[in-house]
Image (cartoon, rainbow, N blue to C red; front, top):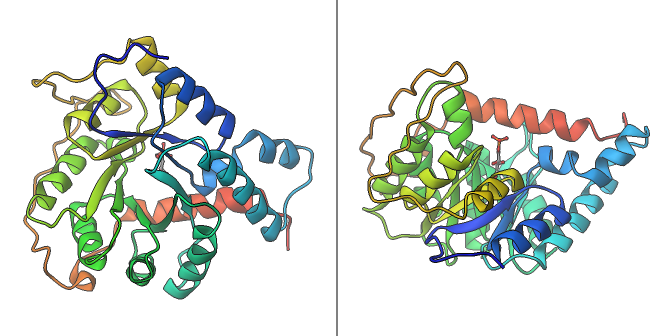
Length: 295
Ligand code: E4P
């Protein structure tokens, strides 16, 4: 067990695709509320890598079966923040196709959250899912306006909806990713609380502490960040904590200004385009395909 004096209010998730890693973090921290997975992380799991490097690639059905096995092992290790399972979507996948995958994945485990990309089709799938009581996590969120659309598209959801702003990837392009989390939290203060902010793309301890300080409801981090947190004796941010990140060249990050959006607007009227959302989908598709047999 760990030496916690106080648990963070933010719920803790492991970002990965290897059940052994989740188990290790659980022993280190004392508990794990949930898990996030994505096609890149699944492609990198030791089981999948072993087969791929020996030249035995998967059919798409075998890949899905492998994903299901991984998710079922992880499900037992984590709490009710659930396991986020990502649908396989490229830029042409329709909302109906995503929903069909989501329905199946949702039946794999009792604590599933289905991850849809923050695109027009992804939000159509999310809108249909919440009507059917399928829990959702909207991923690849890079702007406050996208998060406004997530709120509007999922209004009326029975279970909390997650939105996943990508802190590290925003930092990578020189903007302060933690501002994105803070701005979304501030915007949602005017709402009904049905969307919870899940800070993702967490690369180091400062990101973790910044997520706690921004009062994100949830944060997901890879095992190496949880190990860093444990090695520093589980610090929590003080009231004066301010996230001051730098880009890869060591330059200070540019602040992201807060914008006002009316959360009561029709969701499709928001501008959903973001180049990093498109790039993220393309990367996930490439990583997924790298594990498949040529058809
Ligand atoms: C989790 O849901 C995200 O897919 C993950 O945190 C992305 O992390 P990365 O930006 O380090 O790839």
